[in-house]
Image 1 (cartoon, rainbow, N blue to C red):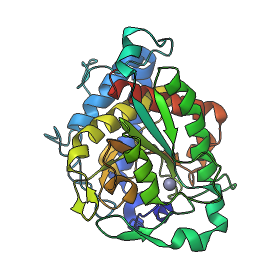
Image 2 (cartoon, helix red, strand yellow; image 1 turned 90 degrees about the vertical axis):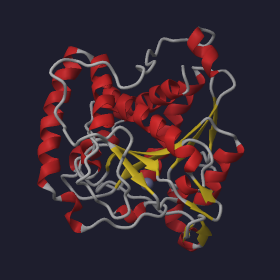
Image 3 (spheres, helix red, strand yellow; image 1 turned 120 degrees about the vertical axis):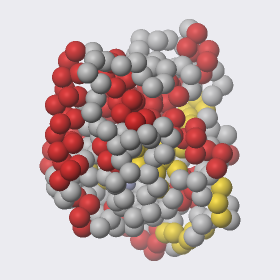
Length: 328
Ligand code: ZN
């Protein structure tokens, strides 16, 4: 059910039933729990190391994914025997840091655009959201309804709730926060407008919040990074590098605050996926990623996604990743 995306193709049926990923997932979950008990900071570092070295070239799902290349020297998923230093500077994740400190100053004047994926009103405005818009490389539907849990909790409710929890966490660091919408519109905005809002705000970082809608048993989070594309108004070459850094920071912190594992159904256990088919990424001129927080159609993930306490942890992890990316 990945068609819930603004413009994603459905994956092959086999995408949710690949056993190697399952084995990796089970192993990584155990290791992650052990590491979390021993040293939360080391865990964040470990995830970042895994992201840098564990890019599996064998994972070609879903279609048109361009696998991570930066630093990918092999497909080993074996974690270090002892905690290793992070591949990049450790994120500043202390919730107690207040504006006005050295960290706060580094963030002064910076802007973050938060894009709550979809809109609860989209279900009643199918004609409007099905209208095609130009995303540079092709045309796509203006927006999509998003998925739901089996009990009817809408992805669009989830994304707006996480976004509203994210805002005060970022503002507490002295960042300016702009939303693409805040539940005030009957539908949309369209994906080209969502991108334009980030561009016109000259955002230092843009994060689109989502949850996936695939089959039971597919679990975990992933962060979607822009592929290098060029066509029409789309030219992502300048943002591919910084967007990857932003995505790695968010993935590592999201794992730390939520305890969730990287998706077990795509991304080869890295929690990172590169895509060239999302208008919201193709049209962005600012560093931007999508965060897929979990799978709404999996009963265990749904129990997390419907928990306000878990959503607060998710928002904190995303905020910490953004703050770390921006030098705070
Ligand atoms: Zn979505």
